[in-house]
Length: 237
Ligand SMILES: [Fe+2]
Ligand SMILES: [Fe+2]
Image 1: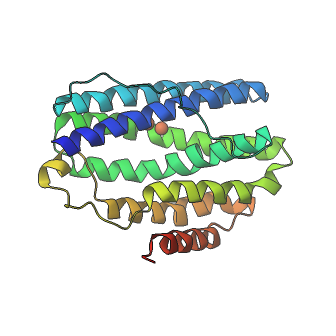
Image 2: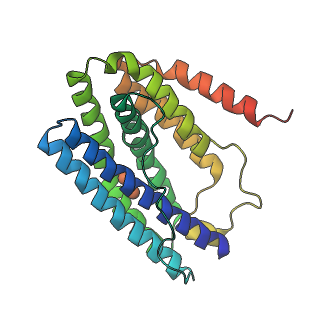
């Protein structure tokens, strides 16, 4: 059960990280004069992510974990790779909301499909209920930024390819767990790594490509380049 506990603890940390990013994003929206609706939706997302973290931690406890909810997490927050603050805002939104939350929808559905243990199924049910709304928030916020900031048109390709590269490193792993997942681990909601990679690629090339086409982003070409550089980096020298 060690692997199951580690999995749910890392899921807890990921949800805390999402809560931190959403909270910070709401602050940035306030500072940049976004609509009250958009700001409130973002604050609601932050609260959802805390609920997800609580459920994920509860699943780790049900699997035998007995430590505190979370350790030192002062480093949580959004990356700021660009010098222009608004470009960082666009980058975070594309990475965490448009791309991350859109991929999360089919990913968590696949995880729940295998899960047989009640705490895991309960956590996934809540997450699956919330993620389509989180993803939609990203696409609505992108439309708002595009309509209000002329720079978005010039930044969007750069920001999306940066986001794609970052998330692909996390999700597009073609090395399966060794040893492979057992039936017990599948029952507790774990997913083979190759399934992550397949779902990630499919969602990027379909939903994300369709959503970004109106902004002139050629997702297929960016994905081909990202995939090639990942495979080159992973190849034995
Ligand atoms: Fe979440
Ligand atoms: Fe979310």
